[in-house]
Length: 145
Image 1 (cartoon, one colour):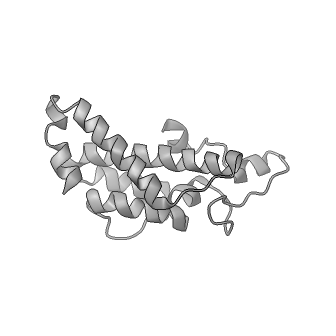
Image 2 (cartoon, helix red, strand yellow):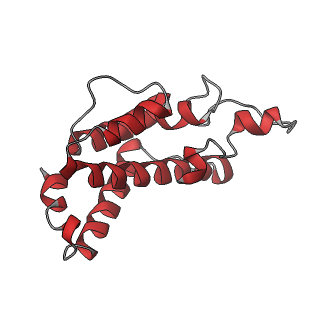
């Protein structure tokens, strides 16, 4: 997650800027350069995945256009939702990056709903294994509502 936070992921736009002979376009939509902000926040595929996450974590008042807005959404949550938003964001970033790599390297595409299902399963597992810890005892109720 820290590599995404510091914008150090080897996105296609960064690789092309370093001189690699590859297309800088997003592998999901092929309409825009694959930057961190586009890949995780601006792409229609990613927006569809985030839609499921936002339905569980109280959606923002407007769609995000950059990474700073995503971080503000996490920090601006009521105290009981901050941990859930952190977990959801980390899982979403991981699964979107994993699907991006799967699409580039294996030419295998899955629907956004399938990616959200994997995120949902991962968050349920994380909460279940830590349910006896102080901050995790009420998270499942928040996630499932």
